[in-house]
Length: 444
Ligand SMILES: NC(=O)c1ccc[n+]([C@@H]2O[C@H](COP(=O)([O-])OP(=O)(O)OC[C@H]3O[C@@H](n4cnc5c(N)ncnc54)[C@H](O)[C@@H]3O)[C@@H](O)[C@H]2O)c1
Image (cartoon, rainbow, N blue to C red):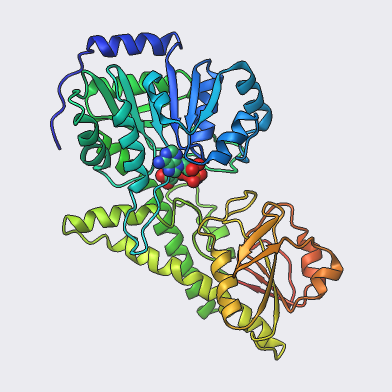
């Protein structure tokens, strides 16, 4: 790791810090999704003028009209901020000329080969480089492999001839937001920040401190990048472990849910994780592979990550097997059966279907000849197998039409009592029917 020079604020840094402290700094946020929009709103609520930049014209238009398209961001907040002029949105990157600090919150998916796809980061950074000016702070928030800030972004920005830590400032700060979490949000989740130089860290820390409850400086962007990957790998590996345990318990005839509940009473050294139909969302199924890719490039095999990925990746197929088992009990084949999937969002009480295991389950069942419908109060319609499916309202009459109901996402508002009562059989992948006894239920 390169040695960092001791903190000594340049004139440009001092000027920027003054603007940050008196909140006259003009802030930019590139990428206005689940991460970028809440951040832009927080900064705007702190009194900064914030301009969000996105390549998606529809999103920009919605914001200009004062409307939120992100569940955790109330439209009322957006409307107030747009009307007061604190929040603006545009597709025009040239606004960066007038921006003092910019946070980059663009997607970081995997390629078809399951390698990091950093093309969004590169595209956004190229735009930043184009409009980089003295005294500008650039912070990457997208989850990515350790080294991205130093190896990918710094050269792009340095090619302008400006010097990092003196003319411009660059840092990485992972976003840890948990959509749908009513207790922890952008503001009260501690923010880890690692700058390329100590001045970079200092400037970025001071910016976040204007609004966020707690900021945690670390020694470098690599550390900050690695922090996020450790957190998400920790989840992936522990979910993988408990998924394997669930498969093992099924063989041994033990109720894995009861085991976890009882183990969870240990007041130290144990943290409960729960099995499920597979990983979903834009983070846990993807981020660990950013790390294993980087490790592999250095000749290191990240075996826990690969193994957890393998076990978690088997879970949708396991759920399909449970559906087949439940149909088999009533002498029915998957082919020609009518299956209702409850919940297509990747986790409860949110509307995000990215990487949702429900989609894999639906697709595999469809391939095996089942007729599929779904119900999800958060997802009114869904593109599936070349058609637009509509979410089914749950009524006794509707439930009776299906051979099997699969609880794939445990939304709070599902009427579980009714589902059990009127379904012919239920595959419960989330223990949503906890405490209920019925020969109709097959639990994961
Ligand atoms: N969703 C989460 O829960 C979450 C949590 C923590 C971290 N993250 C990370 O944050 C990053 C963003 O995730 P997200 O869920 O907000 O994604 P998102 O898809 O919700 O939003 C990304 C936005 O960036 C825009 N965009 C794409 N390319 C662009 C470009 N070149 N210039 C400007 N805008 C561009 C898209 O149109 C979209 O509006 C990812 O790296 C993700 O891993 C996500």
